Image 1 (cartoon, rainbow, N blue to C red):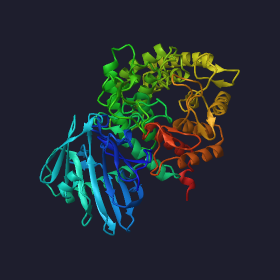
Image 2: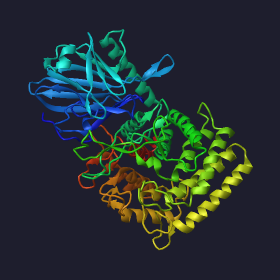
Image 3: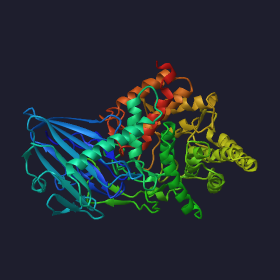
Length: 600
């Protein structure tokens, strides 16, 4: 089979410590070590078909391969790739990152397991294990042991332990698959048990873990497989050690063809974290929220004395995410630049304050949680609420991180309102009537200012900036955030205005006006899901279901979504997998599904 150009028909494996993207032929094309934001030792996704960089991947080549199939094992994060050759040989490759409970802890090593076996015939294979080092600057150096190979990267040493002949892997020798093969690529530690037995045990226990995790999800009756896959994918974007939730697992996949709109998303935007936590909470997966609360409280403590809270942090709470160009990688399909770091950490984005408060509000109301929020946590949040009061009418870069266009953005103002509104509700829940009255007073004042400055009677719609005349996709959230009621005619008017200006077929742009890079070319997937939700709220459910079904058809072959969709071709663009997009799928499915009571 000839080597195709890079695309986003990729499957994801991971264990909340590391993750890897695997293409349809079973090639690892992206994986960072020693954590989700580390050096991409598998980086061929950013160098596909670039002759000078023939490393940064891990593949099992089936000689004479003519077709491939790929799927997840049901309700797991385990990927099965099946390759067929021209002589009726069939090779099965099973990939996963171990994750399971062991000695009262979650075992999630910095490593992956690859198991291979012949399903029929006598497949002839060649294993190419070529990690890179230094963001593709060079191929990782190797040293050999009796049953292992060490790959020496800049930040980590990986050990490949295997029951295949080590020389076959080092020399990339083609050989016939007579017996199953197991490869454990992970920490540079001696394995004191048999490789076959260890990989089998890891496989069984990892499958059991994910099936147990999904068993407790409160899924909708319809579209169960799609929702479960989205939920598992969101969990894989959670760096469990700190509680951070990444926006995506990649950097620099362009938002559209031949554009420089390509950014590093391997960080934790507090806004995105709120959306992910809310979606998982709806499914009953509350532990991720508790982990994110740990992350948030550390961020708040760090930011308490600073004038402005930054919107994005590293997975280890790093504040400085200096954006720089990586010269050693040509980019996705050669569409550079490749970026490391993200300038957004310097932006003023005033919605972040409300996002922080909303992300942890449930902890004051949900008796299922092991640690409920109390007065001490409220005091932390009240300091954030004071920022909402100070910043709701100030210019910022907005939700869309417009680098050269500061205005008072309606979404940021509404999120500030939502933050103080929730503080009032929390105070009331804790029996603090005086504090509830204090925050209700601020909420009423902010609401009145938004009504006066962000609503256009001429358009019968809210607009994206105070005093402006344009709309954007974030206005579809005014009902979801509780700012408007479903029977408020201004919401229906806003939905109509957004649809008229931003709808392309059944897909939604985030905005239509020119920004720092010109006019956006591709639709923004989460905005389409927001539109679906808004249609349901105003009674256009049939139309919403039709669009939702179309969005499901736009997922890749294993049910995943990136950030953007090309309206004409349906091709996925943007960083992958995008948590926003998977959140949107879950929320829309929950809105649209028939209730279980009506199912049977």
